[in-house]
Length: 197
Image 1: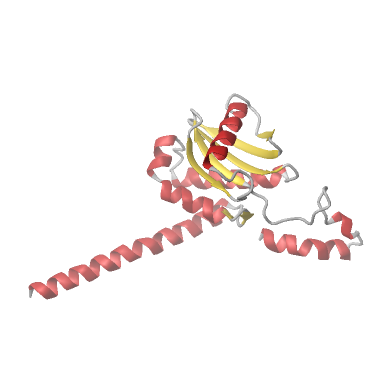
Image 2: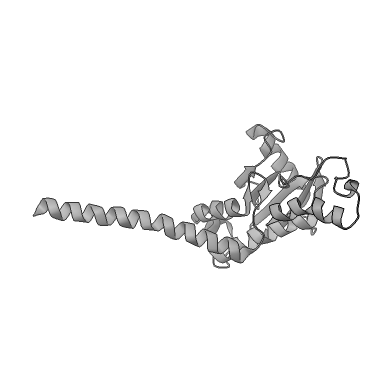
């Protein structure tokens, strides 16, 4: 949906009589679909539980990524804010019991857009974890967590910001994956009984 809106933005601006400069970002670049630079979830000690970096030039090595995450955690774990600016990045975050959820964008990125991604991720995970958003439950359901993140963001592009749509897609993919073992088990049973006869 975001792709369609961004594609229509220049058309709308020209029809409304605005010049092309309105469509450009503040630094003169054209707007980009790649709005999310990274997503990560840390525990209350700052240890990484999940991370996905979508810009390979941002922090190319694991050491740089963990250093960035440690800096972000040190700046945000005691703060009551929802937005932080660090190392030229806009970071929106939320905490729950013993977890910290982060969505990172460029300095020019719209905080509301990043916050909608964060809220969608948090609400979707809350539903999957049955409102028990804590470290142990998250680790027990990591495949669902990765599915949720992949349904919301693909390569830094925001695909979905509605938790209900994300849950429908995740449930469909999970059901589809559950059918395969069931079919294989049924086939094994049939082969076993045909051999035993």
